[in-house]
Length: 301
Image (cartoon, rainbow, N blue to C red; front, side):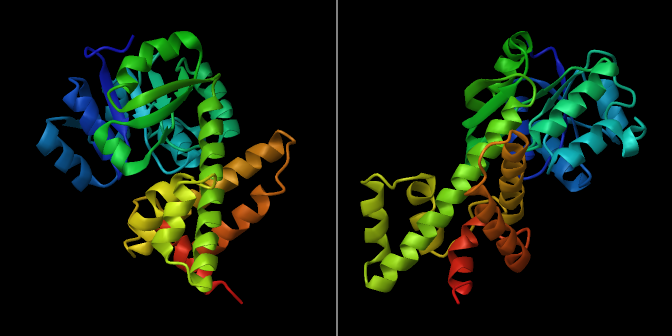
């Protein structure tokens, strides 16, 4: 099992990676971190005493477990394997054999399986362990973490993952974590659109928005958006839930592409992806995903 004697290399000290790495440090793990934004790693080192690697290769050489928390699977593969899989100027350039790689990013499940085959040839086991419950969950160490790996490796890393989350699931073999993460975000994204449209229609009829939300939350239409976003982010006008439109659109596309590869229905996924793609184009990648509430008003013709 992973223990406090392990040296964890954490690549990707961003919005989610920062609190996740901080929770690992608080739990007593020895941490080496790297991010292209040096200010982030310097701040983390100042607060938690972690070691900052000068470059990706230095992180890989120091760690026996590498965690990646990056924007997507392409970024993960480049960070681990270098440009064109050259294994130069990358995390695994100087890594010892049997260095375990844990990808906690939101990556393509099919791409993850391809990456797993590549890393296996180099002697590095790969597992996927994407997360849900957002920034608040990352800060509070209450993330849901869905793991794609064999059972033995899952049992080894579970204590480590429990320092960052309180709901740890073994989803299945490699890629299963990324598959269910994309599918979960698709369901969430579809429910958010439906909630926004219900709010707009109810308000147009003269029903107070708070009343709409209260009744839905006491009825069968309740979902994550109606519980945690309608009043808190949309009706209030805050729009700062901490998850970007671009990342949500990417996750919906990943889910749709995965379903297509599995030869299952995408009759609802396709228009859902089109709506999120249109919002990303109009509102920008970094806009908060809860701004769908505003976007749908603008899109009415």
